[in-house]
Length: 131
Length: 131
Image (cartoon, rainbow over all chains, first blue to last red; front, side, top):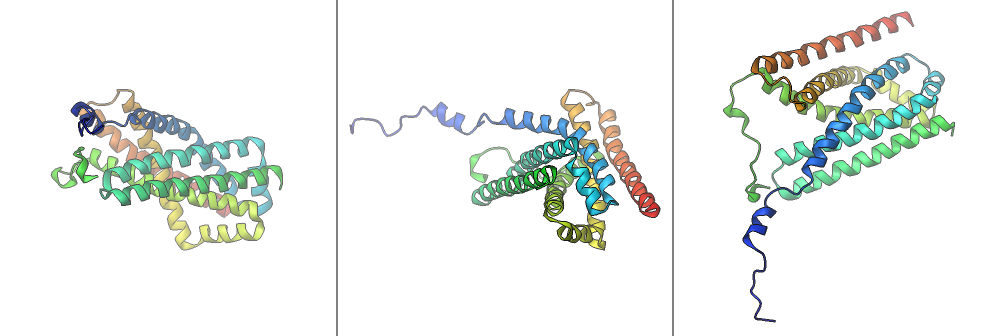
């Protein structure tokens, strides 16, 4: 066994390890697809907020409980948090150059986004189902 | 990540001021602002599901002076990120890369986003006066 060389890896493998992790295309593409969805969902959200703005509590709840509004709100929450995580990830990767801080921030934004999105979804479902 | 020998973001001070630089920075800044704003959307939905009293706390915050300043900031951030996002999607399609077009579309993102923000707040004030 001791006859094996210490280094098994071809130098080329090492050089490749410094390059792409192969996740870039999917990140780029998902960010664009969510962006296209958010063009429509974002404009719709503004219109919903404008309708809720001067409404009383019961009217606001009734508006959100309507099936189409509830569905579009859920679509908005999922898409927007997803798009936000992808965008914040790029900003963190660009500007945070201390490895442990970078990793901690990347994990933290995902935890916060998933928790907030799930809480928002449960809220919409409670309103829509009258619970 | 300084030890990986990957190229890092260029240092800002090597460029002279130009509008394309501002739109790029603003796209990131408004993206970060909107990520925080998403948490407010989640809070609003959770409060609406939680009952009239909790929703009252939420609307009281939004209608407070700080809340209104934040809402103005977020509404412009949304419209700017929307306009400039559409601009970037068009550029992803390979269009608008002539320098003249690039500068013109940068200004269009800024001016249209300001107009839309003014329009929405004019609407809010008009509805508020009518109610």
